[in-house]
Amino acid sequence: MIVVIKKGQQKQQIDNLVEWIRGMGLGVHISEGENSTIIGLIGDTSKVDIGLIRNLDIVESVTRVQEPYKNANRKFHPQDTIIDVGGHKFGGKHFQFIAGPCSVESEAQIIEVAKAVKAAGATVLRGGAFKPRTSPYSFQGLGAKGLALLRKAKAETGMPIVTEIMSEEHIDEFFDIDIIQVGARNMQNFDLLKRLGKLKTPILLKRGIAATIEEWLMSAEYIMSEGNPNVILCERGIRTYETYTRNTLDISAIPILKERTHLPVIVDPSHASGQARLVKPLSLASAGAGADGLIIEVHNDPAHALCDGAQSLRPEQFADVVRCMDPVLSAVGKERDR
Ligand code: PEP
Ligand code: MN
Image (cartoon, rainbow, N blue to C red):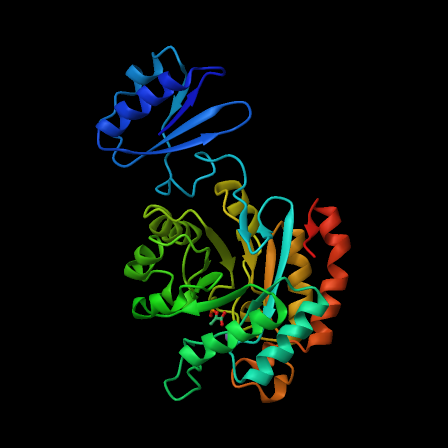
């Protein structure tokens, strides 16, 4: 339920209303815009007397919200949420490039790729340390050692880092990670989401391989309802009957999410397509559809990558994607962060 407060009301009166709502056992989300204050009611509002609230002097209007996601709902928070990661902003008019290898393989590899993607225009470094592999016989990532190598790359380049968490067990090891990624396979690991909700670290929440947009937003809700408002959504392709690509990039999810939620939305064209040559066209399409950024796999030697070489760009190919992006960004009123 959303209560819109009339313009120019006294804070004390608004506070009294909020207290009264909380007294009914409901959560409250307050959004103060330039023109109005909106109070979002979270929880079971079926017993709330809508007429009673509507009749209060300070209230402009009351509407019930049908969607099950509340904190993530744009109706509760009309302005875009902007998430600051080491001075780089996700959301609003900003556009970020996250780039790096699928997995951290060695110190030399991660440092070389980090320097190359930074020079090409990336603002955040990606690299998997704990890898969710389909086969238990595939390379599983360097684990804690991989995190240490990412820290070194950050120290060398100044780039914030994003890396995936696979299990609640590792949460303490991620204490200084700038963005914690929840991979597609863990999108509905609700215990993990709840634990991440207790942090303030930005969470990159990838879409599950067979998740609807609403299920995905409900996963964001798990994190936000525990107190962490810093969720960045990542469309990474969904499973369909198509076999020419690894997944099917759901471009329409981007404008739909922009309508439904205030959270930043980025796109992973690497996992969506599985093929390096498709990364550039999908990147341009994603930006054109209104994405707030991209996460792209880049490797200094894709042919010998331990993971996802076929979809990894070489640094110069990544630089070409960045260069070609500016006209698209200016068409949609966004600017690439530098
Ligand atoms: C990844 O980003 O390395 C990854 C495994 O992605 P996803 O969870 O989208 O498959
Ligand atoms: Mn990968």
